[in-house]
Image 1 (cartoon, protein in one colour):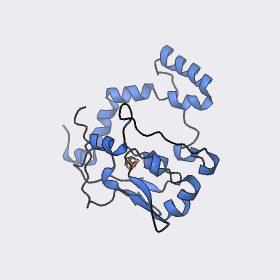
Image 2: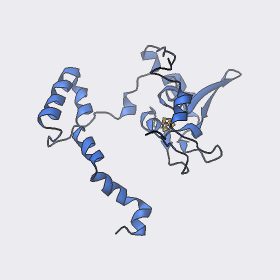
Image 3: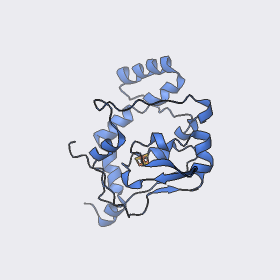
Image 4: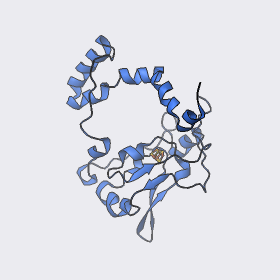
Length: 191
Ligand code: SF4
């Protein structure tokens, strides 16, 4: 029987997750991505052995050498990418894709994307990394806007679809995603 206390702190969720098919699938695939840090060929060979022969049951777990945010390269070391416009057949603009997620946070709720240093995006990240939050956020939550040649970092938190990419990817770990008010989605109606 589930006690009220356990429901409140959600510990039962972890227990149920650990017994689910989702955990089983994720556990069996855990070594696939880290093995590609040895290079494409070795990664393919290892993954074939791991997944086909051992079906993800090798008695060890490979680890990534670096956290994701540590691998981001400075903007001046990388080519500028011109992303093609959406063709509305297999690629779509962010606004219509966010609409499909059913996300609708109320505009006046507290911002759930916390900046440890509010000045950092413009004073450091924009110069060094061309503020990548403008591009890695799939919902267009982060924008750099210019007013009288002054850059301003804008957070449209009501569009957030809770992927947590910003929490993981921000190069200085300046963004912390906290739980927003409930009931605002995402809710994918056709899934
Ligand atoms: S959690 Fe995902 S959707 Fe939300 S602001 Fe961060 S990157 Fe954007």
